[in-house]
Length: 265
Image (cartoon, rainbow, N blue to C red):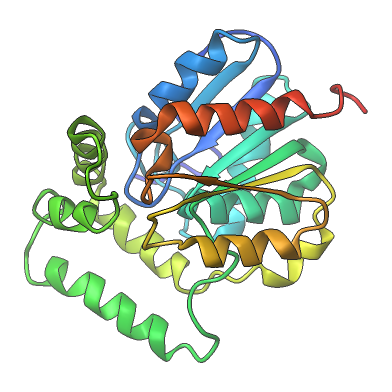
């Protein structure tokens, strides 16, 4: 049930400046456990949310980018935090870009992992076809639990840790169908390409070398459009790089965080 203005559920570890992780369309807060443990022990308040409509978070009043983006500063206000470093993965990376465009003053830094600044070509035909194909199994009566294993097999790299794939599959299986439908519709209209050049906070762009959903060539092109951004490839990782290669993912993020200006500057 929608609860306009409600705060999202989250889990966190550690104390210090806020490091907030946003999951993708098939995720939830548990997928960042390797990051929460790592950064919570290193002077950060590392936090991952259940996005609106996911896990223990109430559904948004409507599934649109402005509505979901507004949930981030609302959460910061509830925590009495002026700013955060925002880490967005996949669709969470699109939401992170939306937050940066609308509420950039609340971001001390921005990390975009396995994502893109737009979804498909501008004509709209490709998006319509994509949406119809993704919704057809649900329309035919299949559940998210049925769809999750086959969807996840296309996202992880060959030879990925079975535990990582299992965790990602379980998260996708738990996504409410209504949320998945709403987020798919949002996905097909996303386009923030024109906002990239205006990003003024430090930005890290992370790509998985074997990511077939957000290929490195797409990520590198996005990084080139963001002034002063840092681009890092996680070798051997597919689309879920933070789970597939957590040590490499954490090292790249840690190096980025170490170079951030002090809070308040």
